[in-house]
Length: 269
Image 1 (tube, rainbow, N blue to C red):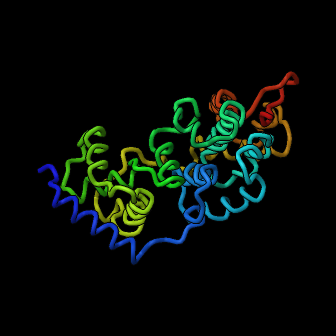
Image 2 (image 1 turned 180 degrees about the vertical axis):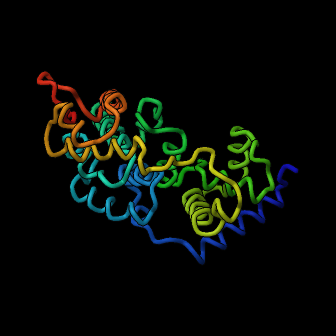
């Protein structure tokens, strides 16, 4: 059955009551700076909150504004990101900072109105940053919020994205978007998890050990110490030569590395 207004009112009360008792004290909840919130959102993608906190503080000590990040060297950005995983997120963040600084004169919120131009920024992230920075009456849906809506309203997992976004808009308490979305995040992270609800994410992380992701991380660590010829990398990484070259080519396409005139692989500056 599609939720009634009474169901929605009860749902709002349940979520906000949980938040009043269990809300997490997270550093990005103490700012309305869109750049800092954008940074936290990108760091939190597919990474546990406990791992992000230290990186978040160290990052802002080095690059406290979007303009500072835009001026940084790509190698420095990747070096700072190492350990968070999915290192192409760092490249996308760096490129996004450059676009925001050059095209939008450092105005993060204005740039997010055109998020399709920003690599790695989708509807969820664009809305989330605007919500947490300005408390605007917008909704956003990540894997936690999707799981909560499906479970609490007894909906089928094939419930369409369009219908889910419409339901999320019906559930939004006007003028309270920031608190509402923080409450949903905490309810999903602390109580209604994938395990307790039985609702799996649409996409799941692949195994790291032995994966291309593990090789990519190792390659970046090696290349951050200096350029390497392919022969040296083959010695360092005992995997099939064709697989290694395929990984390197993809990393080059993503802007992580370059093959310079001396046939040395190196971090792209």
